[in-house]
Every structure is written in C-alpha cells, then in structure tokens.
Image 1 (cartoon, one colour):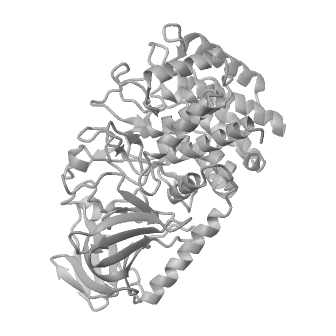
Image 2 (tube, helix red, strand yellow):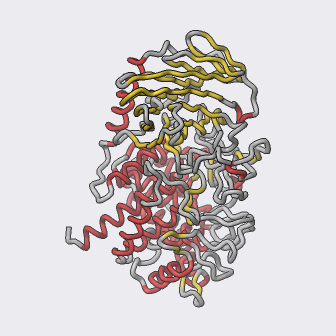
Image 3 (cartoon, helix red, strand yellow):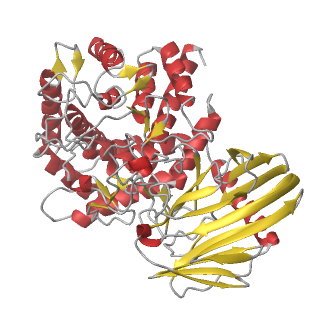
Length: 606
C-alpha cells in the first residue's frame, strides 16, 4: 500500500477532451484516452502493479518535491530539490482548439535543471484497456511505440530510451540551464507518427499552451476577495469539460474511494444533468457565456433525442457525447486504491429516477438571460412538453440527489427542485410570452409547495428533512434559499440551519446526511462532502451570518490540496477522499465565493 500516494497529492492536466493526474513525485498514475470515459492507459492509482504509470523524476533518493501551476494556466510544474541540484518537470497537454473529437492526444513532459546537476530517470509502463490488453513495444532511434489492439502510443524523448520487457526506460543528466523532454502521444492504430522531438518544439508548445489558458481566463469578471481560488476552480471546470459537446464530467477519475477499503467506489467520468445545469449559473456569473451556452445546447440535444418517446424525458447522466448507455461492471483484476474494491466502470445510477434534475435544468435556463434569449421556438416546445410531463409525474418516490441504493423514497429535495422547475418555467413563459399550460404548471407548483411545507417539515427537529418518512436531515436542502423556495431569514429556514449545525456540521465541514439514521443500501461510512460545505457557506451568507460564513469558507481552503484542488470528500483526518478533482465541489466553491462577496460588500456599504 506504500505505492499509493494520497489522493490529494496530484495536479490535473488536460486538453479539453481527456485529462491526466500527475503526482507530486512526477508520476502520471491516471490517464485515459481518447476521452475522459475511455479505458485507462495509466491507472496505477487503482492498481500499482497492473494499472500502468509514467514516471519522470530525479533519481536522487533524498530529493524533496513541490508542485504548483504556472500562473493562470493548466500547466503543472513539479519541482525537485536535492543536494546535487534543483530540477523541474513541467507537464501539460496542448488543447485541441478545433473542438472536433479526435483520437490523438499528447502529454508533454519537459525536464529542466535549474541549479546544479540533476539526473532524471524515465520509466514508462502503459497498461491498456484497464490493464486487460497486452501490448508490444517497438523501439528504435526515434523513440518507442507501444502497440495494443486499436491503439498506438508513441513515446519520444530528447535522450536515449531502452527496452525493459515491453516497457521503456531512459536517463538523462542535465546541468543548470539545460532542458530536455519526453512526449507521450496516443492515436488510433496505424496513425501517423509524431514529428521528431526537439527542445525548441516543446518550448514553443509550452508558450502556446500558456497563452491559450491565460487568454481564456482574461474573460473572467470576478473581482472579489478570492481570485486565486475562484480562478483555479473555473480552470478546473474547463479542464473537466469535453470541448466537442460542452459536456462537463463530474470528475477526471473513477474508482477512488469515499472510504478507504470500502465499497463506495464509483465511476464519475460522465456528465450529470444536475452538475452541468448548475454550472451554467456559475459560468455566467464569471463571464464565460460560451461555456454556459455550449452546455445548454447539450441539454437541448438530450431533450430532442427523447421527443415523442414514452418514459422519462431525461436520464440522470450520460456519456460526454450524449450516449445514455452507462452499463456498470466491476474490474475484478484491480485491487483498488489501497485495497478499496470493487473498482467499477460505468454507473448504474444512470437508470435511477431522480426527479430533481428537471428543476436544475429550468433553473439554469431561467437564470441565464444571455442563454434564454437564444431559445428557439422548437426548443421551447420541448421544454414545455417536459414540464407538462412533470406536472403528472412529480409526486413519486425516487432515488434522490445522492443516488442511494436503499430503495425509493419521497425525498424533499426532489420535490423542492420540481417546485423550481414549475416556478422558473412560469417565469420563462411570462418573460418571453411563450405558449404554455400555465394554469396546470401553477397548480402543480403550488401543490408541491404545500406538500413540502406540510410533509417535509419535522416538528421534532424544527427543520425541513430528507424525506417524508422520518426526521433525518439532508444538506442538499441548503439550496432552499438560493432557489427562492424560502426567504433566507425566514424563521423556519433559520431553524433548519440551526438543526443542520447540530446534526450535520463538524468543525465547519458538512455531511450529506447520516447513513446510520437513513440507510442508503451500502456498507461503510463516508467523509464530509466538500460540495455541502460550500453550500453551507452560501446559506450562511444569505442568512446574514457573515462572520461564520467567511470563517467557514476560509477554513475550507485549508483542506484544498497544494495546488488548490478538491476531491469529493474530506475524511476524519483531513485527508481528501473520492474521485478527483470533483467538478461539483469547484462549482459550489465559485457559487459560495460570489454569494459571500456580495453579502460582505453589502455589509460594508459597497
């Protein structure tokens, strides 16, 4: 188990179609291609012996390491300090700006000696198709080619490579001021070989990629108190977006545990309607209208595909190209991160009923005037038909936002977002004077409201609760004031907030719910949810509890990793758990920062 670095000991690089994790030791231990949800090529994070990795680092046993991002970019710099000298490994992937799906993806690894003399060692051991496919190595003076069924991987270096079975190794000694490099390029079998590698070429690529990211970030109109955190989060969201379709994946990884050694190990490399829809508001608030618009178009495509068919208008998640097939299976040959098995690919939650997604879709559309203004009449008809369907379908038990596997329940959050769907649908119909069955929508909206206030409230806890059959609290309801269901200083809401303080908050960190009190069909426990902690900050700020809101936000930053990234959860010892980095966490950080900034500005009379 010593082979497994902490989940948080990684930076993320990507090219807007796929991504790789690079550890603070200079090891690429996660990379899938040609897409986020493709089979892995390097997956040592899930099985050190069978998963494959690509290490490029100094050989000195006493070298210490630090990581940072080149300012305002997705270029990762890993610095190594040893008695002999200081060296750097600079990792990046050139973005494909054509926004056309491609099977060719390149990971560039630049090595530099900054001071003294540094001996770098390269060890490249790909394992294709989650370690299930054999490959053959072809090695010549121009580099190495790893050939597996349907895929080739070219490795070029500015220094000699040698064979190690079907893998490749190499060494280079650099003096202060000298630069070398290695480039790993994936393409379809028989694809064109990359051009010969030179130091000048990788240096030019570095500046091109740096310019791409810095120019893109200049669109941001954030002028608040936390620019570094907000901008790192929005760069991360961009890295997790599949550019050809605009679809946002929930995380770059799969199988990383919510509890080390437990079974809560899911594949998050897909697009959740919920996550993506809520990202629209955050992107618009920051000024990234193009990204927000692209996701709205992706949503519209999903509705159009289901037009005229029976059943649910949307499912909870899709592949980045909109494919609804996410059949779940286990990789029994992988031991899992530090023994956390089973390792799953695909996600069975795609087949669940989660009625809240319709509220998030309407919330996204109605919040973004820049986008709603562009809605076509056929698009409006599909949206209206979806609300007509929901008017007859909302009052059903479902699996809820947390995708529990303990049976369907009358989840309050699902009803809340159904209320949001009708409320914002009515707003859109009025604003754009569109034809709609507004009387039916209004009746449904009011019925949902009355049901939540009567059945979703616990007199025992003096709080809104997770579902109608108990007194369990649920952090998803922290969105209630944000979506306008309840005023942020309403006594019922302040009482709910107090109850959550008692039951779900631990030193400012927030649990989703208590699995012991509300069994979810899975064994084991989980950490606090970083998403929920940022929602807590948002709710506190709206309630006027600004000192606590700001302190909670600042404390939460101490749980970020060394380059400002968050996984899904925080464990009992402050360690990060779950898939990494998680888009929803970074999305909620942006939401919380903007709300808190506005509240503090208002308090200070700005």
